[in-house]
Each structure stands twice: as C-alpha cells, then as structure tokens.
Amino acid sequence: MVMTPTFLCIIVIPSVISIVTMATLLPLKWMLEKEVNNKKSFFPFHIINVILIMMMCGTSSVVFHGFMLDAINEKGWGIVSLYAYVYPLPIVLVSYISAAKIFQTSIQPYRISKHSNVIYLKTRRIR
Image (cartoon, rainbow, N blue to C red; front, side, top):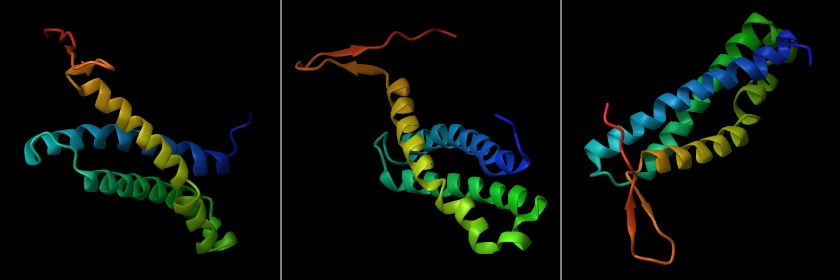
C-alpha cells in the first residue's frame, strides 16, 4: 500500500494523535476519579475524554488535510469537517471503550472469581 499524502493526512496522523491522546487521558481520568470521586467511576469523565480525543483527531485532520493539502478550497468546509469529525467518531468510540476496559482491568489491584465470593489480589512488583 502506497502512502499517499491524502491517506497520511486523513488517517495516519490523526490516528497517531488520537492514540497518544487516549493514552494520556485514561491515566488522567483514573487519577481524577481517585482524588475527586473516592475511586468510583464517573461517567461524565468518559464523555469529556471522547470529546477531547475527537477534538485532537479532528483538528489535526483539518490542519494537515484541509490547510496543508488545500482540501478546503477544493472540497469545501463541509467535506473536510465530515472527514475530520464525523467519519472517525465510530472508530474512536469503539477504540476508547475497549482501551478503557483494558486499562481498568490492568489498573485494578484484584481479580474477582466467577461464581464465587473470592477475590484474588494481583501480585505487585516492588520498584
């Protein structure tokens, strides 16, 4: 597959920026919940995280695809906005939900046994 500038500016760069933003926001959400909400999950933090991820993804797509490749003058603001904000939304939602679940299970200090009241503590490495 050839890396055309359009493919690079619409898919690759916003994806990398979204992954970095997601990797930054998930620990930040966990720290905020730990300090503010007594270690309980707070759903509005998830909504704020998805909005921030979409903002970073869309802004990078508009800057690189719209301005640098001059797609705004060729296609218009509507098409560039669709490529930047609407089309990546399902992918960002699915990836955020799966990343949040994986992050939550990796950070949780115990594992619950199914069909039992037993809780197994995870072993911790001393640093």
